[in-house]
Image (cartoon, rainbow, N blue to C red; front, top):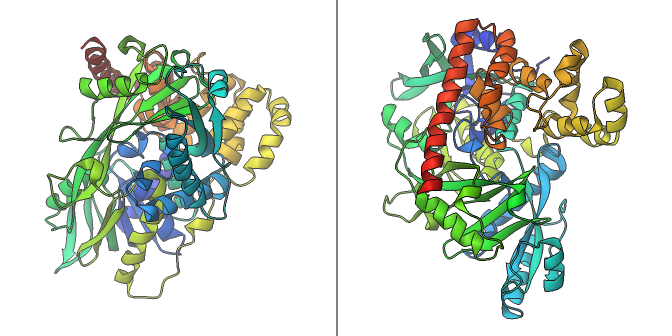
Length: 551
């Protein structure tokens, strides 16, 4: 009955329906919490719409550490509820909800003292494992000797590292995962539209009954009516509450998490590494042929749209990593830097962000209007459930309970069987088995839709960048099925070429524009504008990176 395809035609129809229909739930915000809330609501049988001013995951949800984890450091804060909740969500994602997107990843916790530290850290990791309950998709932690460390992680300094404990968390392409949740919501009947900005609330007396919004591509104004409006705006929460003339029960304090990107050759290790710092933890995370190293946790008051790392951020990351690494990482080794903003709940602007809870808050500042903020990426599903649990009270009728803990994302169904058939699929479609595995781990069972593009035009099986695994068919698919509306959408979020490529994707921007332009109906003017917009973004980031490396 419904389709998960987010195509240009789907968006056109969504724009018409937004103006013509009245919805049970209208969600504002296309980050992971917003799409999670939309999926939760629609899977209860409600009529749901979601609008996003820019692109899915265009803010915080594409700038995380790419980890689905319980938050090992929260054990030291005795926040057992948050850790248990997050570990439960991690197990669901790896085993049931998104096994094609969320993968186990091992980390080494280096030890610098032979007995006391091993006992203390080992006990903590035993508790970490135990809190996940009976669902165990990931292996238990294990102790590793100093001689074994020298074998599996030669970059760890054996003069100070006496051994390690290896434990497992999970890894995800956050932007792709967020978009996949949006597609899953669409598959179950939610109306999804990006490029739609909420500008003001529509009220009937004190009750909010919808929003006045604007199509950012045509500048057309539209009125969207809904019984309950749910705002999932993350770090933009305070700004929108003020814009809507609402008095919220919370304030959002922004915490910046900076990361550096290194070539795989910079560090030699078979697993990721986690380092305890004085204020938090630092992750050295394997990502294809790169390393992601971060993160920081510092107050931020700058531009929300394009947060940037500071020289101090980079210095902190290098200093902490170099305490245990040989040879030391140098600034000139860095090939990329990015920063994300955590929306932390606070009623005191002077609170230190490292001490603020990562738990979320649901608020109802006006009849018919609700919001949720805080939390962490891993617990997006719980946040979506909690805000919809409150929102359904506005409907004044009996509604069904949440079922998202049992609802796999599009692409999950049949994924495991297809992995075992990868050789046959490769032979059938005339592509390499390596490419089939790559496609399965990005699209799951939706691989058939990508392969159909290749069947119609075999040249689309070629790589868009010879140094990276992405196929030209995936570029077309991003616009025809995944809601991409610009070169930036494709290079930065539908793929991760923006930080995986040496030139951040500028060299392929023209070809990307040509491929998606044929899907989006672009002429030369639109192609040039999208290329220029992305090139200017990269130029700003390159200038900032150059300043960081040379400072």
